[in-house]
Image (cartoon, rainbow, N blue to C red; front, side):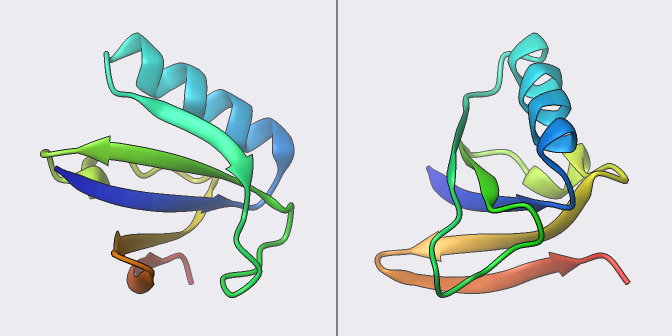
Length: 79
C-alpha cells in the first residue's frame, strides 16, 4: 500500500477533499503538514491506497508527495 501526503491551498479545500475521499471509501487523515514539505494552509491529508492517488486531484490540491519510509517524493504540483 502506498502512502501519500496531499497539500492544500486552504483549510476549507482540505476538508472538502477529505469528505470527497471518504464518500468514495478511500481513507484520508487530515493532519499538520510535515515541516520539510511546508504548505500554504498548514493542513494536509495522508492517504493510503493501492490506487493511483492522482485520479482524486482537484483544484484545491496544491501538491502531492509519495511517502517512502521517511522521505517524500513530489508526484504532483499545481502550476
